[in-house]
Image 1 (spheres, one colour):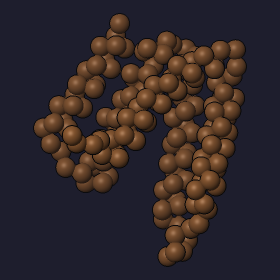
Image 2 (cartoon, one colour):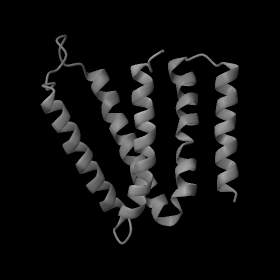
Image 3 (cartoon, helix red, strand yellow):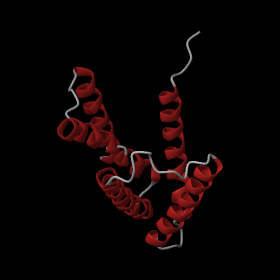
Image 4 (cartoon, helix red, strand yellow):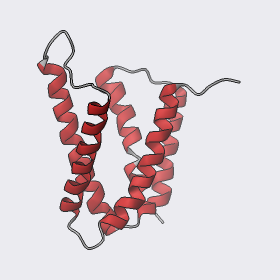
Length: 144
């Protein structure tokens, strides 16, 4: 019996919690400004992450010291996450979660494209086919 690789377990956990997030967020934005709802959600994420880092004793910088380049990319990633969440919560206020969530998952295709262009990751026929199927599925759902 083969075990599930750790990365797969975390990826499936991510997918499950992202799905739960969509439904919980849709319920949470009723009667509240979407930007304020995003702030509340972000505050909870900050507290949960701080609790995990504290519980694991991980409040240490790498031994090679403080480096600006990785920090700059983490800051830009945070900006991108914030903008994504602001857009997502507003979309949830305007449309059903069953339409918004699949369109939001086009992020997979954007990530693949950026991985190819920015990181030089290889293009395979499986990657191309899978990306096309994701786009096709999103278009089918959005057009109905």
